[in-house]
Image 1 (tube, each protein chain N blue to C red):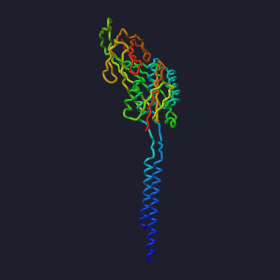
Image 2 (cartoon, chains in turn red, green):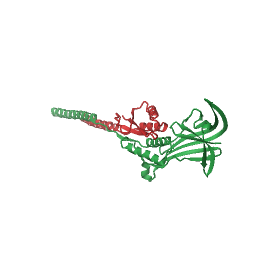
Image 3 (tube, rainbow over the protein chains, first blue to last red):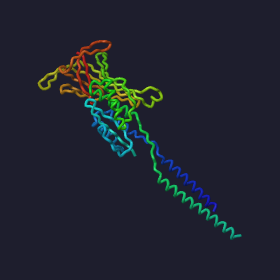
Image 4 (cartoon, helix red, strand yellow):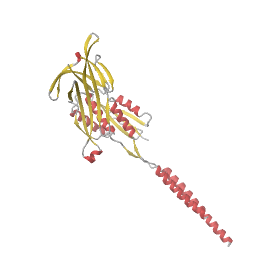
Length: 106
Length: 246
């Protein structure tokens, strides 16, 4: 009987320890969307027109979970992914501006 | 006596079984609670590369429009601030320290170097600790030298005297986050000039003398040089001024 009680107490400890380990391992760590931000930076350095920037951006983001929007200033974006970075593509001759937004997330 | 011992054993067995049942109930409850727990990730937005690249893009756009002065560049930076209110541009506080126009011209041997440098100062996290802003520098430079070769070229009914010029053209971008040198492609604005890339940033240009403009180039320390200018554009639509002497 004492062996059974000891086993029950040991089992309680084991379950509690397992619970703590599982909970700790599932704690969310910091999320960095470095890839999406750097992809847009790289595209901006290597191209100037909105068409070429988005083309390069598509190449850089290939295979990753991201979405790209090209909008005029004032237009709202409705991304499905939560973490977004934007850049303004300016044509200083015509004063035209396009906003390129890349959104990434789990 | 024997009966009492047996009864005591039964009681202990029952307590152990109750303890085991309690453990099972505890485990089930904890697992059920764990399944309801929703995780919220901690998110950090990175800032740096994109914001510096944005300023490089802005400088190139200003140069492409021609006559990029400090005031014009400052207006474009203000536009970024306005857009930052609506879109996640995450701009740094930015000052225009130097505009690309007017650029600098220098003479070394037989080569003429034209440099246009844009300097932005940005208040980054380091500025909080050091008190000094960091810089994003956009440098566009072109070195041209005649090879001495001249030839004739007939386009349609016109015959042109072509002056061969060796050109080195590059963009150099430096920031706290990256240092990049690009060799942008060049293109002629007419169908007369001959343009051939030798390697990387090196080009061989056949310039039609009849379509080149004579200029007086003032080179420090106050030397005036008579020569010609011929304009190309690079892949970012930035005007490229090729200078060569007679």
